[in-house]
Image 1 (cartoon, rainbow, N blue to C red):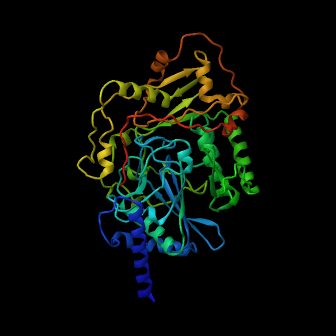
Image 2 (cartoon, rainbow, N blue to C red; image 1 turned 90 degrees about the vertical axis):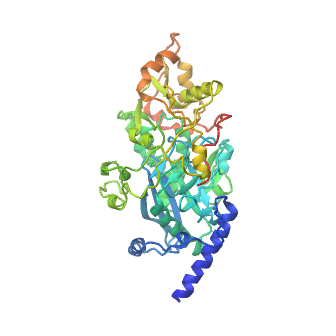
Length: 488
């Protein structure tokens, strides 16, 4: 029986390999499954499954969070509800919080993606990998471009989620067994951060908030019901729910439990804003990394899975700074993210300033090639990465002052302060040009017009809490930038 089961798994793995090579272009020409791609699930993880009443063949679902740098693997039980199997720290992601906009911007994608066996790559240059399937229908409707955005091994990212070799080996094995067990595809949910009321209040003035509120609709569905949401498209937005959502209904039926959770979170957001929770933006030099990989491990920085839990969802000793491979752009990790507070009168227009500076640089001189720790490697991702500029002075932050220029302030945050005159959100642009948060005051003197104007009236916190009514718009794409991501 054991021999027959092993043979069946080998044949199934070979079948997955054939599908993977058909859907990917990163194969090394091997005609059979690699040893790493058919390695069994670790005994410790099998024991964990047993304690949670899970089987190897049970369907899976994966959720990723950029800011917390964590990836969760869930398994579906016989009752149709998902339970958390394990949380893994993300070793590296690149870019900023926000969706991927265009090929070459180093952004890791955000959204809901369907992973089929054909997107699994057993011959990845980065140990093992699976393609996220970006761009999906919503990405294309928004004009977002890019390809070969992966979840893979090692600790190098130019638009991917890098998990280390050991971690991707386990995730790959768990996914492989689910496919062998009959699951035809699994859902990959990618978020900027955990979709809590605290985070929604904290980042309420970020130009990406309308998109994030749309993602939260799918997150609410999963968290309220522990069921995989059916995902559809209505214009440039996702729709979530049952069969009507999958068919593309723009107003699918909302389950009462989901509606209750959404209403509860909206009330909590309004209360947090009314209590004076500052609105901030987080700016990275180039993505982030889970603190467990930076000694000494900062246990206070980890996200809690149970609200009041203080125990890490993974053992810090199991990870740490070893066997990471070549870490991409380590100098950007050393600085860490910076939070910029946004009050009712001063709004940093980070992305707009970056776009202007990049466009100006493009009209001037050719950007120099970058030198990275990965420059001596020959994979497509690394060759493309060397086209990004380094050594250039980062763009300053432009500040829109409501006293100096109310129109620009209104355009940026229109529906947060005036629900009768909605304005589209400012689209994210190339994340390779990184602003300097420390130069707000100097940038304000150069950008803000001198003409006197009355300050734009700020309405109640309740209006801010309803920012999810802002429409999505198609991001503006820049031309002439070389691709900064290729398949691992």
